[in-house]
Figure 1 (cartoon, rainbow, N blue to C red):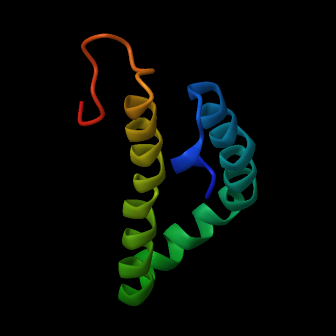
Figure 2 (figure 1 turned 90 degrees about the vertical axis):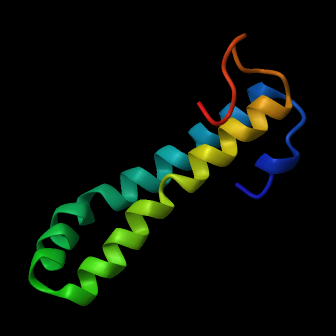
Length: 81
């Protein structure tokens, strides 16, 4: 994903998101139920998991920002929408 900020086309930005994003979620998804259960029982795990879930929004926000820089968003949309 380090390539995304310098990708020169919207197609490459989206390809990177698909190539890396699906792999990450496929590996992590089976753990989510267990971590949610642990978070309900342990305040430390809960704080950690809240940070993880908040950070999951950072990647997509960067992707949309890069798409905006490339002029690839539909007219009327901008990265803060």
